[in-house]
Amino acid sequence: MTRQLSVLLVGCVMLLCSGCVPYKPTLHLEESPHTIPAKVYLEPLRDASPPGDKEDASGQSLSQTSADLMEGDLTTLVTRAILTDFRATSVFQSISPERENPDLVLSGTIHRFYGQVALPSWLLIPGVKLAVQAFWGIVQGWEGDVDLELALARSDGQVLNTYRGQARYQEIAQHDHQFWSMPLYPAHARLNRAFTDAVSQIREQMLRDRDVLMAGLRK
Image 1: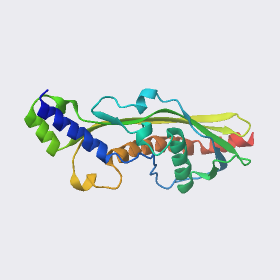
Image 2: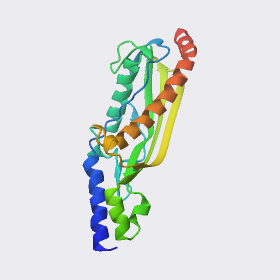
Image 3: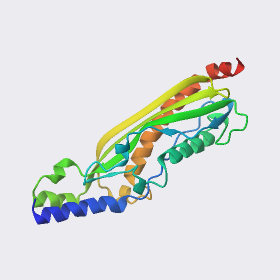
Image 4: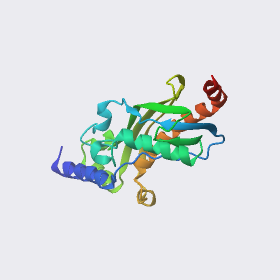
């Protein structure tokens, strides 16, 4: 690899780094069409995601869920995001992180939650011209996977049902000055969209189960 190519590729990676504001898992669900009439206690989710998800895949990539690029612990942030959004969209009569005589207990597992931002492999092909084009017309490869499982149980511990949602993506994002000047780094917004898709699947399953859940409370 020529010295010029090496310098330009380093510049590309630094440009990736400069845009990486801390990542915060955030949901953007619409108002729930129905409300499950129950008081819910939300337990902190369990993180069972592979440790490698929180590491850079290569020298030309960044893991959005690494400790250095997040606003805090993944479990805490994901749990808080679900709590905040379920409250705001009225999924339940009430939901709280405090156990105060709840009707239902909501717990869960993070099976996967990662996003990688990388230089596409074809940008690494030797050639100063290609590197110059890459530097002035930056593109990024985005890849992510969100796989969550939530369970609703009675306060006595009897599990009524489990629900799972998953969203994956792998795409090339082209540089757009207006879009990339947004306060939220676009790759973070893309990962949050996958997070929202996965939780939306779970919420739909819960709402379809509303009568079953309420019947389970009466037993």
